[in-house]
Image 1 (cartoon, helix red, strand yellow):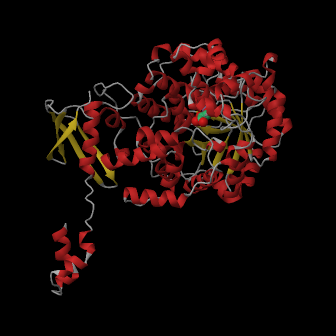
Image 2: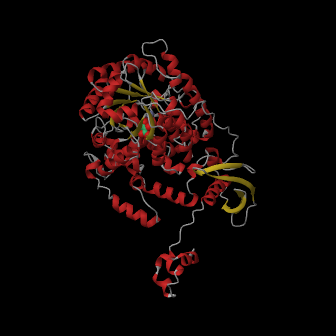
Image 3: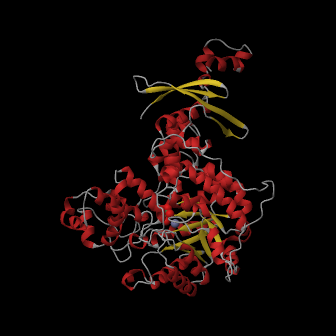
Amino acid sequence: PFLENVVLHEKFITGDFDTSFIDTTPELFEFPIRKDRGTKLLNYIGNITLNGFPGIEKRKKPILVQPTKPKLDLKSEIPVGTKQILDSKGADGLVQWIKEQQDVLLTDTTFRDAHQSLLATRVRSQDMYQIADYNARMMHNFFSFELWGGATFDVAYRFLKEDPWARLETLREKMPNVLFQMLLRGANAVGYKNYPDNLIREFIRESANSGVDVFRIFDSLNWIKGMEVAIDEVRNTGKVAEAAVCYTGDILDDSRAKYSVQYYKNMAKELEAAGAHILAIKDMAGLLKPEAAYRLISELKETTNLPIHLHTHDTSGNGVYTYAKAIEAGVDIIDTALGSMSGFTSQPSINSLYYAMKGSKRELKVDIDALEQLSYYWEDVRSFYSDFESGMKSPHSEIYVHEMPGGQYSNLQQQARAVGLGDRFDEVKKMYSTVNLMFGDIVKVTPSSKVVGDMALFMVQNDLNEDNIFTRGLTIDFPDSVVEFFQGYIGQVHGGFPKELQEIVLKDKEAITVRPGELLEPVDFEKIESMLATKYNRTITKQDVLAYALYPKVFEEYIAATDAFGDISVLDTPTFLYGLKLGEEIEVEIEKGKTLIIKLIEIGEPQHDGTRTLYFELNGQSRELVIQDLT
Ligand code: 3PY
Ligand code: ZN
């Protein structure tokens, strides 16, 4: 490149030079970075082929079918939908429109909660892009697609090595007609701890700019103070603030009086006063029994003017019945997933609910044939991720005892496996409910559910029981998340912290009672940007800065992975997870109109230094790569 630079320089071309011009012209030393995307992809494929994908057992690539796409002409026009209502009438206009609807409105969670709850959040953007154009046409009359936030943000960077913002923006292009909904954990944003207010506000602004319309905002302890900043900022952006009441306990059980109907009614009124456009009932574990749903929705309808959006999980198998009763009581919007991505820890099936409601006053206005075709696609895609399935084979009524959120179940199971407790998961679940009661019967949803999960894992791993904690607790170092919880760093609990346990866990540490955001230093975005730009010598976007501010280590590991492997989000999922079989050939479209043909020819013998040479063909040319064999 140096010689190239010299001979192409205008002084060289015009002959106007002596040898000193090389010393005085530093730009000659600025070489274009050679972007060999092909080699980087081979490096990734070689590594996975040899060493397997982290977190799942190395095995031969299963025979995987090409997912079945619906029969539909994608040249057909995309019908207008709820997104156009928001854009033309604003958030208040949209709320008015919702109230005028007689039919129950539908949110599809397939792109977010369904796979968070069934497949440890591992579904990749590629698999969504392949079907998004169909969704826009075949689900055009849905209220919203829940497709961002929750755990999908960090899992995208952490495990999938792909950019969640790119997912959001690409889906927005493909599905311009239906509202996009995200799950925002209030002051915890899409993380597991409270962040400074300026980070929450900036994150919301950027999410709104990148395509989010409806923000479902909750606090993991139902602490309204933890939601106020987020509600305010969503309103500032002109988008829809859907504030959530997290449902726990059982309003039908007088012995769980802490979470009574009155408790939820009070909270609904407070959220309305705080500026919510829509009230969500977030039944994250699927505890809302059918009769309780009827009673809760009926009483809330009398308490608030807000439209009500109900979210549940089908872990017990009672989800469709719960929705039927909620619909009868006048619920405005419900969350469902496509048939093959529904049920168990996921949302109830829209396909099944359609048939369940047939003949009732509020039948569902959906194109069932279209939903079945979309469901076939996801049935095939789901098979790619079978290593992340929880193994649950039937509905679990024990959910009413352990109360574990659907979105946590498969993730906690992965966590348990990672610390060698895979075969003691039943004990972990029992301990989870013991810990909940020790903590004073708290709302359990990210991140409070993670605190309970961490404590349960810790106790099972160290063979501790409740008595041990009280008798020997002062000599025990509790997990960081548990200490921070008792310090008040994720907020205050309804009814206060249990004092004795709080003292045991905190020892000489202080607890706070104010909103953590009042104490946290604001994030210096410019400082982060210049630090990242210098360190990585690349253009740093606002989205990168936000990702770093939320997850510094995860984001830097993501950058390191993209340096080594390039953009691996372009790979098909079977190759991403299992690499290539000997002799297998794949086509990878690295950008529009630019396709690489990759074939694995041979895997060499192990060398003394622990490496092997892998022989590939890349667009017909031989390529050899030396890769560390870690198996
Ligand atoms: C999340 O916060 O990710 C959840 O899904 C909570 O239910
Ligand atoms: Zn959920």
